[in-house]
Length: 438
Image (cartoon, rainbow, N blue to C red):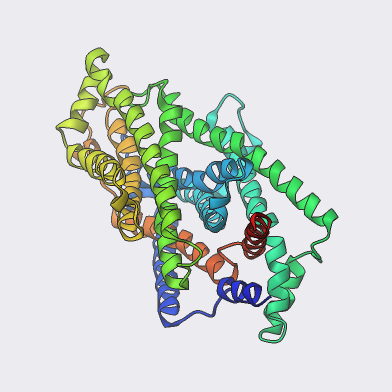
């Protein structure tokens, strides 16, 4: 019983400290600055951005693709771990699901930010064309948000009931909210059976939905027939890249949460070792698709494709391209092959590098291709041949990243990031196994 109380005490949400408060206020300030920039963009139009007739998509679409990719880890990866009943996943799944929810919500918001006339958003539904990947994107993103929220909420219900009792005397108001959200959970066999079945159904549903979301995003690019995107390799290329971005984000956040909440006894070196192996597998698969995407066309590509590849390999985007390939992909693979590279602190830096590299990778995918239009326009300004985000674009983009972090911060503040009931159940099961052996 004392062990149970300690687990609940360790894993129950704690009050924000001074550092947490400063962090939260900083995020809110960044979001407000971005909101001011966005309002100015609405008033003045897209002329405050550096997007022109060539670069129709810029940093906003890069950011959108990054958020969609990052959301992949909390859905498909965790769903597979749930369905295969891997017990080592227990301390990690909720953090992954929180990342997924925050990322997919911000993906939906980011795509609206990119619209010069967001008041016409309803037209995407009223005048939808089934043959357009954009229509399917509009359908699949809200569906994915709903399933992700349910996949986060359903496993939380037993923990919410525990927190209701835990905070009954300490914080009655919080206890009341936890009680409402716990849906009168008592832990009866009937409730457990319904909950288990519901989680299994959601886990099964979200795998094809998550893969379909990545595939549709890939089709948004590849069906335009543009040089650099006209590839049948794009869907698996996007899916493998999402795997890398998502696991990298998970590693980074788990380290920060573990440190901030002092969860070293629950999230151990063993978990980082497992995540390191998962990340190196993801990076190796993604490297394979990168070879297919960039190396093979060197021997088979036509003139226009070669011009695009030269831009990436030796041209104006070569520095970013080689940095995200070597530093953001190849070096992490080498480091993670060694056991010391899979320790918590090295894993944090590797995860951070992978996430930053994944973001810039989306920029490299989107921007250079747009600077090679179908029909070159005569007499256009020289600025149209180049693109780099304006101050407005940077402020708004950074604000969306801050908003995703704020959602994660709020969830980490009020939800147990490591499942309480599941941890208790596994402890009891381990004790039972030991007694049986004796």
